[in-house]
Image (tube, rainbow, N blue to C red; front, side):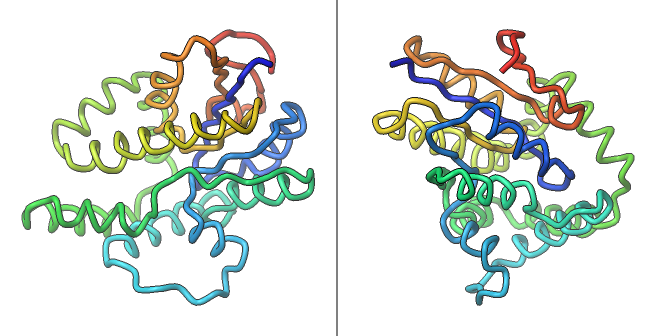
Length: 232
């Protein structure tokens, strides 16, 4: 039987829960993969559970996402929660394919010099007050020229590009490949910024069919694959 992965680009601050539920219904996957680690999934499902020690910059990033999500009338992680709940409603398994978030940010923090640490903290704090229009402009910039967008990130902040994007892409890619030993059809919900890298890695395997649903498609409620331009 054909091995198939559908990569779905999401944004952690947008109201796309209904579209995500529709994707699962339309594709009817064998399993749902999420850009989460087990701890983050547990916290989403039980937000009152006690959390462990959290690094300062991780707290700032979480606060930024929380503020941005409120601008769109949702709570942070609502799209992942919708996917997890829909998977359970459809009696599907849930795969947590991402690295442990705290370990990732701990690695990032240790890898950068003091000057960049200060810039990160100041940038994170100022991002709390970013406007909705700025978010839309940044997203549009990425959608139009994703390669150029990542080149700029790598130029000014190579550690962020390598640790937050590239290393996690490889980690999630390996987990998806392993999962194909068990499942034939996987729908994977990952941040839109991870889609180009994962698509590139997966399409090196000719025996795997890879379809893409971008965040833009979800927000416009157009469930089409950009890679083949055919309806899912």
